[in-house]
Amino acid sequence: MAYSDKLIDHYENPRNIGSLDKAADDVGTGLVGAPACGDVMKLQIKVGADGLIEDAKFKTFGCGSAIASSSLVTEWVKGKTIDEAETIKNTDIAKHLALPPVKIHCSVLAEDAIKAAIADYRAKAAKKDEAAE
Amino acid sequence: MSAFNQIRRNDQPIYLDYQATTPMDPRVLEAMMPYFTHKFGNPHSRSHAYGWEAEEGVEKARGQVAKLIGADDKEVIFTSGATESNNLAIRGVAEFYKDRKNHVVTTVTEHKCVLDTCRHLEQNGFEVTYLPVQKNGLIDLEELRAAITDKTVVVSIMAVNNEIGVIQPLAEIGKICREKKVFFHTDAAQAAGKIPLDVEAMNIDMMSISGHKIYGPKGIGALYVRRKPRVRLVPLIVGGGQERGFRSGTLPTPLCVGLGEAAEICMKEMDAEAVRLKKLQERMLKGLHAKLPEIYVNGDLEQRIPGNLNISFAHVEGESLMMGIKGLSVSSGSACTSASLEPSYVLRALGVEEEMAHTSLRIGLGRFTTEQEVDTAVADLVHHVTKLREMSPLWEMSQEGVDIKSIEWAAH
Image (cartoon, rainbow over all chains, first blue to last red; front, side, top):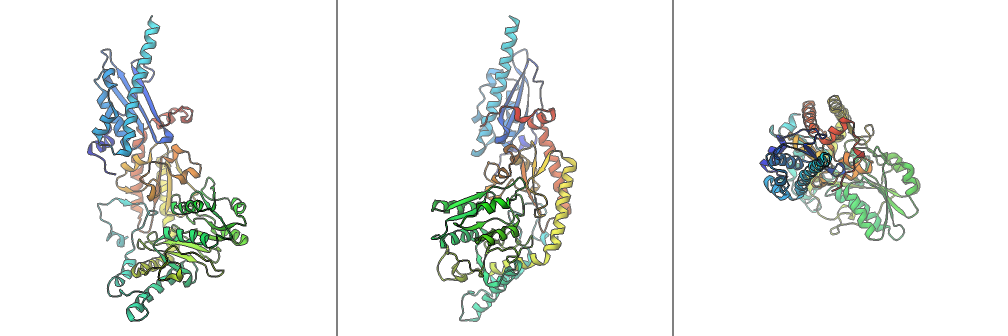
């Protein structure tokens, strides 16, 4: 299978590998996929006081395309508001990395991972608001 | 080995996929060459010297193949490869005896060409029993004994598995089949030339052999068909009645000669080569175990050809690992299914969990593999497995003591 240079670059030099403190209020964590299917992505965002995503980290178990897709989205979400980050589409990821058709599901998983991280962050924020009231 | 260096360029990856195919031995090529040019005759031409010369080449090759497996020359027929041999053996025998028998016994870990042949028979009214395998990849002989009925025509069980290299207990299987008076066919594509085979001692009635798995040419194989007691087959290909009528068509003389030469070299060098490969296999495994925790060999390590390892690298997905180890040519399963994203059905049959099956690589060692290549491969694997584990959420969880099975994963 011939992969694009961008994909290979993200696979060989993945950006933002690591973990953030999942217990922290300003961190949202998304864990998607399943080991039995051969893909698991953990994507975390840290949202600053200004509402912008100031940091993003990922860890992925999966093929090169899955690793590249998650690496790419951590780059994309940084500096965005969570509302903006939520608009990232799997088709944009697939197009940017020139994913072959059998690998489109990797980009879908990456989109799911951002959405899950955002949902987790929002749930934490809502709980915090509730507690403050 | 210097002979191989003539073929392999230095900028090419290290070849570690000897179960997919093998490079042709230069000695085999040398034996074949005259039959492409001046010894070009049709081996079936009886009226002139060109035909006789080609026939002599073919018959010498037939003898070389027969000798490798303890058979009589007349019992070996040439085919296009092990796939054809398996099709011909199983379909041919089932078809011939269909008035009296309608049952076939095989295993779940057979090569696709055996499984698909069996599916074809099922569609045509036959019953097929697919024996499970134990955790080590070997069949349970009592289950085999119990599966054979008075309607069983043939038991087809592979000699050596193409993914995990395990050797089935052929002599014991043969004994049971003979006792129960059913034919025993074995797909020996991965076994011939690698382990000693004797159709008499093992009571084998039909055996499939492949040229390109034993350092011979692609496009040629053989089927051993026992004459006493006689096994009858309905041919798949009819025409001029060559090959005792089992397989019509002009024989490809150079390919036959190549298969024969390959068989003879294997026979001469088998014992020493097995010792050498065993050392390389142990060296590789020791090297990996020294640096990598949580790696598991799939399939029995003792009842196994020394040229195969199938290893699960827990928490590292196999495809991503293969993308990393660019300097090594390995596979995640059989070559035929390497385009598929499904985990190997062979590993699943051993009870390897799906998540673990996704982390497996098949590493094949062979005649031209060197110690240095093994060391390079170990270093490369250690480097990339470590790197990928650092970015694996599953590895992180397992290090934190989280039971991955306790998490409710959303299947996708």
